[in-house]
Image (cartoon, rainbow, N blue to C red; front, side, top):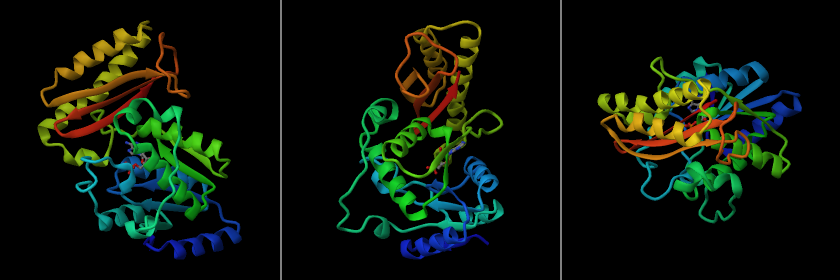
Length: 281
Ligand code: AMP
């Protein structure tokens, strides 16, 4: 059974002892309701490190007003079973009062990379993400931390924080895990009805179309984006295409002419559920 810890002081003590023994620490931060995408990160960490720590914390500061913080799926019992099967050594699941006591006042903000894509539509989101990841890194002191390319902008933003703040942790990006039909795995897929789930396939279909167009020689981003949008809007439960962008994989700047290695990213509302996905060209 994975060792569950809820107390910051306690887990710091355990980690400090493991470090004294010379053990390397791999860390996978999550918001729980685990799926195979999370498990793939845990497997990477298991491979590279002596000890794997999983955190489960639905971080209130990264949700905006009117977003799904309250209804975000939570099931610690189920997560512990999955974590144990995956061979996790320590599960850290703090409560909100420990992470954000009433006198909490310090946040981590980043400019430039957080301004476009999801940052544009979710003001304050990356401030919340960076604050919690910074805190978790200080608590867990990992040698390596694993993040999914599913949240591509988040991965790039975290790499930049680690570089800018001279943090001693290697950030490892891991590929997107998809369902057999292409849908990127996400805890939020639980919100989808059966019919909505069919419409949710439009995200990956549009990304595969973009890749196919690029591979057939199309380098005009507007043409690719237009075809993607048309495909997505053919699906009945799509409420809104929030953005489709083709960007440089490191700077996240939109491209005038598409090149190999560029990244196509999108956010789409299917019913009331906001889904994101992306692909490398
Ligand atoms: P979350 O619990 O959604 O905050 O995700 C925790 C970590 O798992 C993040 O680094 C995500 O990018 C990663 N992740 C979520 N879904 C997937 C997926 N389908 N494939 C790979 N990584 C994922």
